[in-house]
Amino acid sequence: MTDLKQSYDTWHAHRATAELLGEDILRPWHQTVSRRLPDLNGKRVLEIGCGRGDFAIFLARNFPFAKITAIDFSDSAIRIAQERAAAAGVQVDFLVGDAENLRLPENTFDWVISCECMEHVPHPPKMATEICRVLKAGGRFILTTENYFNGMLLSWLVAWWRKSSYDSGSGPQPHENFFLYWRVRGFLERGGLKVEHMESNHFQWLLLPRVAPHRLCTEDFSSPGWKRLFRPFGRHFTFEGRKV
Image 1: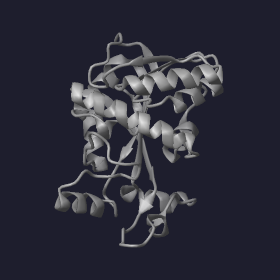
Image 2 (image 1 turned 135 degrees about the horizontal axis):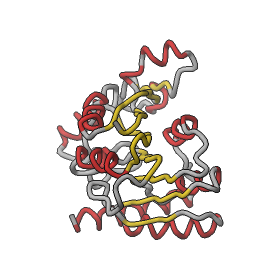
Image 3 (image 1 turned 90 degrees about the horizontal axis):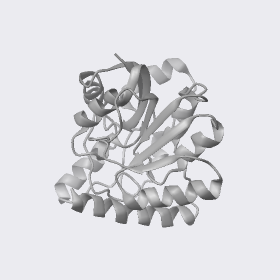
Image 4 (image 1 turned 45 degrees about the vertical axis):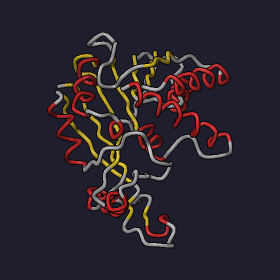
């Protein structure tokens, strides 16, 4: 586990440098989550897998009377997050923590948010159980993660054939799970959570040599009917619901 932490410290330091060079910080899945959230003012909110803190800072800016706690496995990520929050002039309680073993009291939070984290933890069912444990009775969650029931499956097959690390687009991460959306839903429901809404975006139809992936991709559908029809094939899946 120590080796994994050190690997993530290095990865986050590298990604922070890339962001300084002009990469977008808030991703499409953040936009989906922000659109689904109600007014969080007066609520206790936990973000699991906050990375370098940018979405937690976004939440603190938009909901200044919410009590926001944000955790990440990486010491480097939390240090960067704390520096960014101080520069932004917002208050977020950033903590180093393990998504599979949250050192937080049970029945504490009104909302738990996690964006693109579960695919990087060694034991996803433990993370689902922890989300349920720290939520208050009736508390709500929203979680996004990868789904490879689409053209990205080809990347996994190539990585497996070459015996190389899978690269989801921002460089190989220290740990990556192969996820299909129904498997993630199973983790959540067996962990004590009720999934009430699912949606997806970034429909990667195919990957071809020497063809930029975005040329064979539909980012989203404006029609609700088309969006629901093609939902199983979206790369980024959003799950929303509550503690049972």
